[in-house]
Image (cartoon, rainbow, N blue to C red; front, side):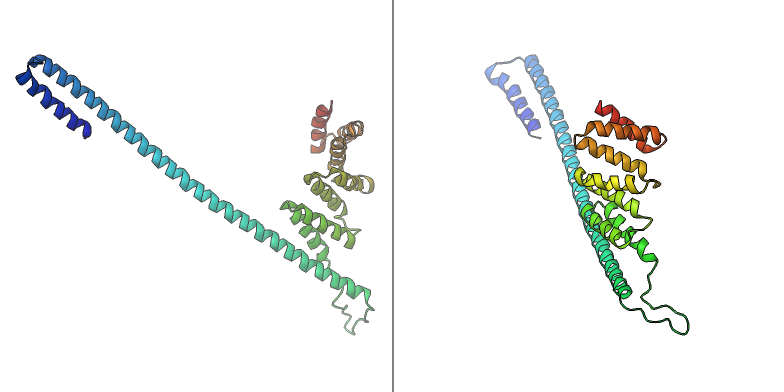
Length: 251
């Protein structure tokens, strides 16, 4: 609009001036007016395009700000959900541990005779407790709560040393220590699986854990020997594939 007003003003000047001052002929004045009008139109078009671009950018910025606010809200919800899940796991484990302690105390006390009906005392072991204790410890590991997982697995092994889940418990403790960048503590956990549970399905992975820790602890000759054992003895396992890759990196 300002450019259009300027054009009209200049048009008036150019058309009036020749009559009084004789500065331009009619043809020259008309040419200059046309040139000026073209220039003004171009400037107005440029101004309009710039305004459209600015409006578009403003819209994009607002959309991005809206998306950022949405993602922040989701992140806060996820963090809150994770905290709630971890609290539930801890509460469940504390309740389970309390129940186990009550059963242990009852077992240590003199046992009353069975009733005439042949029913056993209520404090008899609940066979589901072992499974639930292992699942609670593993839930800590899966949620990356590694310190809680280590404590829970250690308690599990203390209460159920002969459990079928014992080799898995040692293996997951090794994994938890590895995730915490503590290969010095992880190595004996993996080694326990190798030494005591040679029929465990976790054995190839435990051997790889041993080799990986050996490499991390700068025991490369021992690591290479362990990796070659995995490849030769368990060639069709995922542990063998990882062993081949690590062997290549250690050369």
